[in-house]
Length: 434
Image (tube, rainbow, N blue to C red; front, top):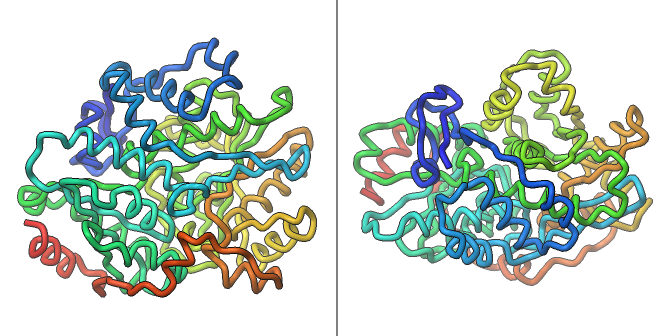
């Protein structure tokens, strides 16, 4: 498997280089040179495959022999060891629950797979690898859990002060060992900018082996494609057209869905569902892409004003606005509307959804006004208990909190407070990791 940079298709890298490096030197994003389609026999037998078998077949086809099959099977068995069930609220509305992993968020799939892949490629290298990751909420906890105590790898997580929920913060600030947290006095976009600047700093990269665990890293993106196949497998009526509704922030999750479609999965439409940070829905409506500073919302994992993976989306569609908007429909909702969605799902179906899933539900409802023959799969990206205060207040009821989350409440937070300047961040890294 070879990958190119979205900024220069002549800039080619192997899978191992792309995974361990994270970003190309030209500040583009890595994309596969070839995205092969899965054979017809795979889809004919899809319902007989386990989730792990689906992941293996997708990887085997995409990787094209760059990892021996026995090694790849072992890697997947360690990474993909929890389910992704589809819950049907009615014949038109399905919920893909992606919160059954260690950190109760969809990013567990990408983080655990990436940890296994990086550990595999890191064998025999005695120099410490430092993973930099910016989080708007769920990424940090998933990466912390995925890489916890991984030999030879340290993780530095940057998160915006006061803009993640209490339990989200505890997930990434209480593990210790090889996990460090930096509380940035700014927004997620500020955190992401610091990470990107570090990767482009030649002096820093000569002294520290750096890589990324955000969805800018192709190793995070590939495993997120697995559960699109797993969800389609579980649909009872495959004759009806299907739309996957993706609550979106940095747009890695939706880009992974596009990868699944390019590999042959019969997805008819995507729905990009955002909160007030609606730069992509605005682009789909107008053709103008205007990134701007993010604003805080109750669906904080989507508080992204300059989504990195939009570059991959443009690359997939050859920068054609008309082609992209024919496949992807965009909708956005404010916090008041999100609360209405939370309550409607609970009152109508007795199902407790989280704020991000509520945004997805609203988008599906509005999409189906124009496409009533479609069934929709809403990606429920996090367990509602991660936003317990907001959910309980909105629904006026108590919800159960899994023990692995509740147990964090009383643990001591360990984080370094930092401003948004690179002049603060670079010396911190050099002092601790060079």
